Length: 502
Figure 1 (cartoon, rainbow, N blue to C red):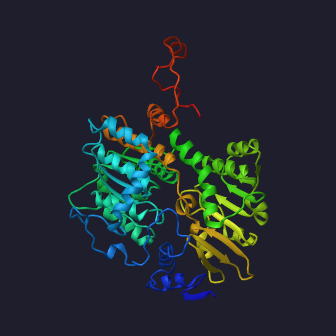
Figure 2: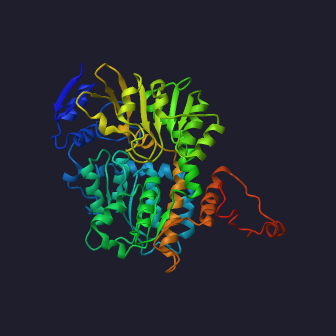
Figure 3: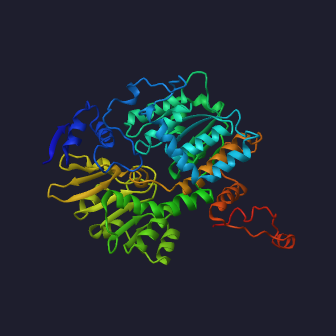
C-alpha cells in the first residue's frame, strides 16, 4: 500500500513504509531538497547503494549539528560519524592494493617532499581511492582540506578515516544542496590557513572561491581540474579574461581520457544498470546520447551483451565514428517511443526534455553518465500531475496519469558513482595524473605557466602510464641508439608529438 505525503505541489508515493517514516521526520523547507536528502539517506532498504556499506540510518541528526572530536582532540572536520574511522581505514588499505602507482610515487618522492609548503584545498568524490590520493599528497609534504563534489558519492567511513588522521574533511553521503555549499565554504574559509593550490572536480570549488573569496587567488599557484564540466568552465573564464591563475586540464590528458572515460565507463555502465534494475541487456533497444569517450565505452559494453544500440551526436566526426563502429546515428525524437533504455553522456544540458519523457514507453529506464545532473530535465518531472515512487535506493518510478512508468536512476545524477563503484585501478591512473599535475604547477618556475588552461606535458602522461605497467607484468622494449636517432626521439621519451591522437 502506497502512502501519500502531500506538501506544496509534489505528490510523492513511497513503496515501503520505512521510506515514509524517514521522509516525515524532516521539516520541509524547500520540498525538493529535503526530499532528495531524506531519500538519499534512506539506506534502510536492502538495496542501499553499494558505494557505502556502513550508512547507519538510525542516526538522523545532520552532521552539522553534531560536535565530534577525533582521537587527537581536533574538531576541524564534519563527517557523518567519526567512529567509523577504523572501518574506513580498512577500505583505504584495500584500495591501496590496486593503486600501486601512487604508493611508488610516495616512495620515490618521500625524500624530496615536492609538495612541502603546498596548501591544497580539494573538492572531489570522497571514496577510498581518493583517500589514497589525499594521503599521498600529505606524504609528499602538502597540507590538505577536502570536501565532496557530489552529494551522493561520499563513503562516510572513508571521510571518517581521513578526519581521524587529521585531514579536515567536510562531507557525508546525502548532503542537501545547502550542506554542499556550506562544506565547500568551511574548506576554503578557515582562520590562519590559506590555500595556495586547488584540486577540483566539476568546477564548483573554483566557482565558489571566485564568487566569495576572490582574494584567495592572490596566493594560489594553480588549479587542477579533472572533469569535462569543470574544464569547460575554466575555458569560459579564460576566454572572458577572468582566469587569474594557471590551470591544468587533467581531463584531457590521454591517460585520464582513455582510462577514466573509455575503459572505466565500459565496465561501470553495466554495473550501475544491473545493480539498480537487474535488467537483461540482450535484445534491448538502447539509445546513447553522445559518442565521446564515455559514449564509446558504454556502447562497446552494451553491444557486447547483445543490446541494439543507436547514438545521438552533434559532432559529425563522432557521428562518423559511430557509423563505422556499426551504430545507427539518429535524432532522439525519432526513436524515443521504441527505446527501452536512454543513457546521456554529453556534458550538456536538457539533452532529454520533458516532451521526450512524455513520449517514452512504459518501463523505459533513463539515466545519466555525464558529470552533472543537467542532462535529463529532472526538474520538469516534479510537477503535480506526476507521481514519484521511490522503489529502492537511487531508483524512482515516475508515474504518468495514464499509469505509464518511467524508471529514473539516481535522480539524473552520475549513475556509475551514485549506483555502483568504479574500479580502483582506473581511479589510480586519474589520481596519479592529478598528483603529478599538482607537483608540476606547484614547483613550476615563475612564468612557465601564464593565466591560461594547460594540458599535462606528454612526458608526465607517459610517466603515469609507466608507473602502472608493473601491475600487468608488462615489459617495454627499449630503442637502440640507432633507432632513436632514426626516429629523431630521445630514448626516454616523449615518444609522440603533442598532436598525436592515441
